[in-house]
Image (cartoon, rainbow, N blue to C red; front, side):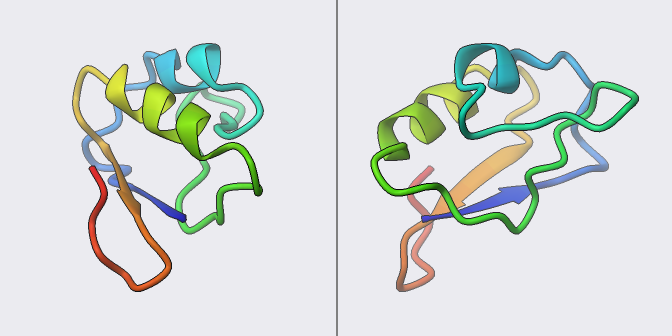
Length: 70
C-alpha cells in the first residue's frame, strides 16, 4: 500500500499522525510528509484509519496494483 499526500491541500491539522503515528510523519511545520511512502507491513488498517481523519481528504491510499483504496 502506498500513500499519496496532496501537499497543496494538507492544512497541517496533524490528525493523520495523531491517529496513526506508526504510519504518518510530520515535517517541522506540522504537515504530513508521508507522500510516496509505502505503508509498513501490518499497518494497513492504521493507514486507512489515519487517512480517514484528514479533514481535507489530502491523503489517498493505493494498493500494490496502483488502484485507489481511499
